[in-house]
Amino acid sequence: MPELDARVKNRLRLLRAERDWSQGELAVQLGISRQSVNAIETGKYDPSLPLAFRIADLFELAIEDIFLREDGGQDA
Amino acid sequence: MLTIPSLGGRRSILVWAMAFCGAMIVAGLVVRRFDLGWAGTLAVMLFATGMTVPLVLAIERSARADASLTPAMRRYNRRMIAGSLLYTLGLFVAVYAYRNWHPSGALLWGLALLPAVGALSMVAAMARLLVEEQDEYLRLKLAQSALFGTGVLLVLATVWGFLEQFRVVPHVPAWAAIPVFAIAVGLSRCLNWTRA
Image 1 (tube, rainbow over the protein chains, first blue to last red):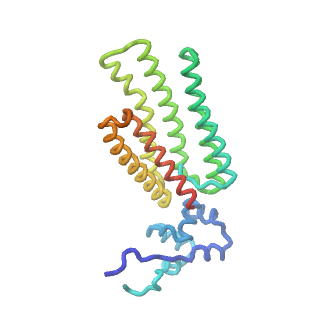
Image 2 (image 1 turned 120 degrees about the vertical axis):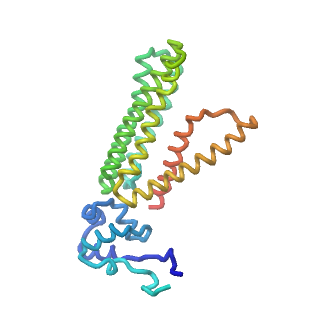
Image 3 (image 1 turned 60 degrees about the vertical axis):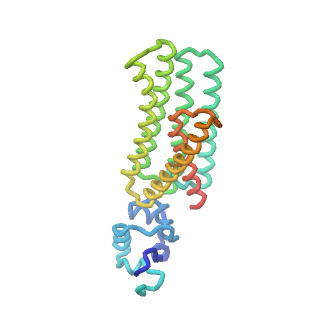
């Protein structure tokens, strides 16, 4: 059985820093609150699939280039 | 209101929250102690309730500076202000009419339900916020706070109900459910602030 509560890590903070955006600026571009950006970056909240697609579109990357499984992608 | 204000914003919110609580207490004491007539009593009650306006504006200023004020939250704040003013007005009219006109029958039923209109409009505002909030993280936090409030209300109502049944504690009117729920939701959001 795959682990249902497998943790997801992300590179959002790094990608944002590369573009020199503040959390607030990223939030405005995504149409979400700064709190949400902070919660995603700190791993307190994993975004829904539609929001993950929006984030991927904004950075022009694939979702799996931003959101990574903590087990490194190994099947459980 | 679900926001994570900056420290300066928090101070401003705290000041206005204390002013609001102070105004409510003073208004309650003044209305009980002095005979202000119906116009004076209504003016004092509306002034105290109106103190929610600067409090909400301080919260919104802080949230806007923090890029956390969503359109749904803004609408919720307006609805809650309107609801609290409607509640105050309804309560005043109901109490005044009950004391002075001694109504009975259908009119008494209508008057007794009048304060509930404002209170229920605030419950509706909470429900609409949950439906209208587009920010999925904030919506999750709202839902968590509402569940926490419901849980606290169920626990307190059950425990108090049995204590009351055995005459250990005095009777508490059922309308207390809304303030108890609101306080528990507020407490939950304060805990979210400290964790953020």
